Image (cartoon, rainbow, N blue to C red):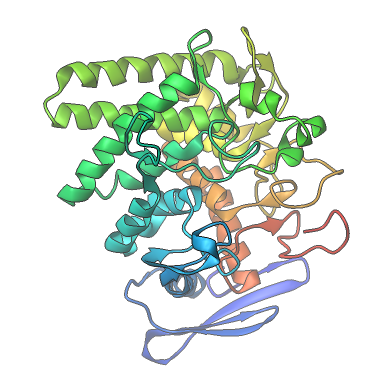
Length: 400
């Protein structure tokens, strides 16, 4: 792992190049990597080179205009923003917010702020209640309120509040978005927020097959990841209210956060598996479902919702492959590779954070090897990889 690694019959090797650059010799060819502004100086040439490659990939995601067929009649929109990737030349709430939380705020804070600002909106209808809200990405059933993970925006924004104007907009958007979700997505009977699992919005892969034609079940359900994101947003609300001298509002948000933490642990924890369920069917009490996901698990740990023995059990008991951990379990043989039967590096990065939070060296090493192996063998930082061989493409109807 100092200079090369292998998986099956594939090998990747990193060599140093003049002027601080690197050359990655991957299965599909060599890639020259120029010296970057940020440098890693470890004993591993491979790791140092991959850190430089990540910055080179990030440069390609930094654009001056964004496009999507559903916006501006498909015409470019001027925006010095980050896009989701080569095939997705637009700025989306989930992709941007998770990426900003993980790293972007350190590398290009001004661009991250501009990108986040693009995902805020006022209300078009002058007769409707006014406010500043985070825009919900597409999801099952046509976005919000079937999908309600838009509060992920605040995971990224919390790192960028040293800019006074951005901090004021964040505070306004936080108050308005939390109030709107409390009114339309919160179920006071069970103490949870309704809505689809965060980022996993191809419902046939994660929810019962019949939801392909009827999203009522998803609309009435509760997702671990989405509820933890609301917990994080409420915690941020309490902190920002205290900073602004509003002790009453700070206590209000803090009470809601504490109650939500209790409800998450009450309803999602499955003692028989030693895992947090990915989602629950709607109702009082909620319907337990034997489904699990790595992002929700990791967020529960890093947020502090899962603590002590439960945090360690949840990560240690989550099923995995030698090459890395799947984003959902059980995996499904009747569905294509995408969220199903796949590793998503950003989710593995949150699993790495969770492993660090509980100080588990075995889990830290497993997640880190997974991330390094995937990017080295593919020659880039891909959105996802098919398990168990970390392939970037599998042929056939159920490939991906």
